Length: 141
Length: 141
DNA sequence: TATTGTTATACTCTATAACTATA
DNA sequence: TATAGTTATAGAGTATAACAATA
Image (cartoon, rainbow over all chains, first blue to last red):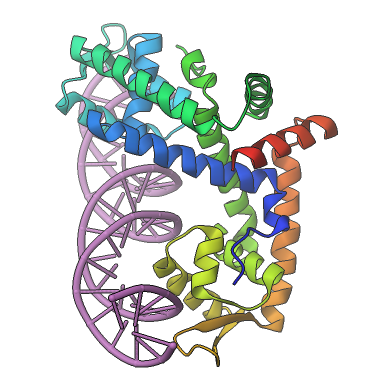
């Protein structure tokens, strides 16, 4: 009974990326459970923590997700007390998503969790190889 | 209006893998539309093309998916005329998934599509870097 | 006219539990 | 008792279209 991945798939960078991406997503998802967060919520949190207040459209552009999705994610984060929607005085179509103190704290905790997951995922590589793969993946993005 | 990914995310190999994995999946998905296939169907097809007839459980093990999922995928591929379920004479609990001639042909076409996608996805890298990243990703898997 | 945010809808992927038939 | 396959169900992520308010 065969249990190994055929070479044709194992040799495709695209396939490796899909598979490793799913694994990373799954590990990260499990690690976020204690914080009552999921990866898409973390992404919004992390962008706001790094960039400061942003419109929902800006968040969508940065994360390359549909702006309709941001609505629900902002709803959830708002219910968790992590952010507020503040109308942009310069353009009243816009909501500026702004982290609360609790949101800043959640972002910090989640960021620490992300570092732990990162270490687990890359444990098979030495420091040099890790830098190499990071650089090459960044070039692909 | 900021539109760049924050460094904290851009520097995480885990995040890069998730993002690149989704992109690869999406490109591949679009490329498969003309063949009336989706990535999970391709995966089953590719495994059978490489390994020959396998039980549904073996396919699940190789692809690391739940065996309950294989049921529906095999149903779809069967409706497309790509495979038959043949009862295993040695163990009547098992179905041996066997590609039909049409299935073999579909697998070959899909494989060619996969190669095109692979070239697109990795166009930013030279031959040496491509080998490097492939090797390092294989080590991570 | 174009953009921001919202709502509604639907589809795919995925996980789980309960069931059958065979071993 | 354990394994292979099946069925049913539900949740999460995603994509799309139509709409209101504002530019």
